[in-house]
Amino acid sequence: MKKLLKITLALTLTSFAAGCSDASKEIEKFADKMCACSDAACADKVMSDFAKWAKDNKDAKGDEDKAAKAGEKLFKCAMEKGASMEKMQEVLKAVE
Image 1 (tube, rainbow, N blue to C red):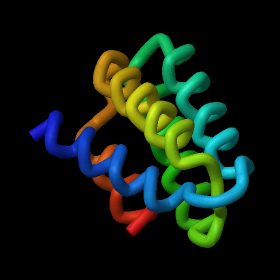
Image 2: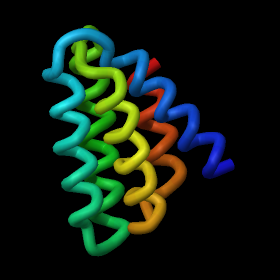
Image 3: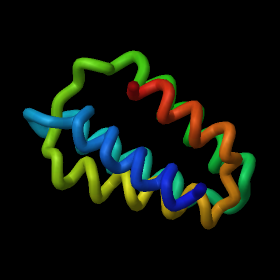
Image 4: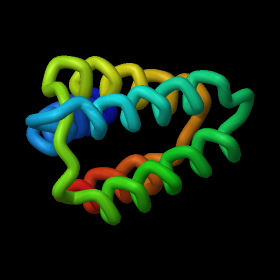
């Protein structure tokens, strides 16, 4: 399930961030914040913040390759830090 969710997020982020470089840079910032977390509470907060940003910026554009790599990093760190599956699904819903 986690692997499928990770793949879905990466594909969604790739389609979400096609065009200029602004969105991919924002996704990279969220990935860095996630990887800096020391616990699940922090990871859940970053996921919630990212979901809100994604929902508010549905028309944002960015570098597809960078966005996909940042999305993978974000999700990998989220799983390592113990982010809840509910928060990860919240992100997927926000970027649909």
